[in-house]
Image (cartoon, rainbow, N blue to C red):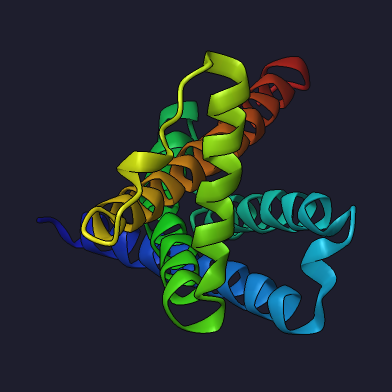
Length: 172
């Protein structure tokens, strides 16, 4: 691994950790204060997440003035940082369903089975036994990881497109 690649990976890991820690603290604070039940709690997080990803891109641009920041470089930066951010998000939900609010998962699965019962006319509640609950919890945490990763990549895609389009419109 070259020295530039090591520095690049350190940069994305550092910013992924920063954004991930902010994500973790945002949701923990929302849980303990009750703000997570507010209507705009997740919308404010969306704005904060997009701003932090944008600031990560701007910081990289400032540190590497001589380098042309291409669309692919922004996307790879977002990819590596999104892996870390999603890990923090999944850890929050793992902590939530095991320690903070053990009934959260039960209520969540009850709601899911009710929706499936009305939508598909099938009763899946018999599948939810104490033996299968760890499997469903693992699948839930993994799905939270995947959805967080995908959403971070969509935000990065949006920002990379705006930056690239801006560069093409206003010259180099």
